[in-house]
Length: 119
Image 1: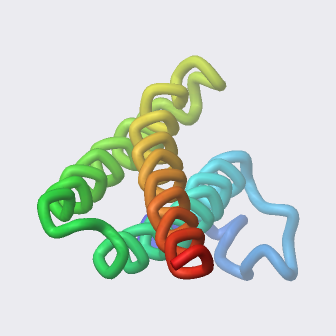
Image 2: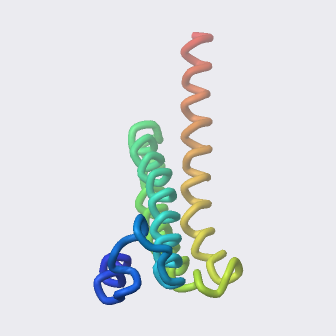
């Protein structure tokens, strides 16, 4: 929505990225959008697989990870223009809970598979 609103209000960017180079502001907004898309694919995949594979008592980690994801995305977007240091906390809150969840789910599934093969 921020990209669309910016394009609508900025004559230099209204033609779209396929027809123009774009202003620095639209390049920043597109970078934030691209990173958010990439992180969202990983997170949603992790949440879906986790909701099926995690033991019942561990399901509470999914909404916690989702809340950290949302907070991280806000902080990432707010700090993006300050460089790596400005977006680090937001990226960390977004990515690390997802990565930890994916590793835990992977270990659980591997242990189940080993148990199935051995058993």
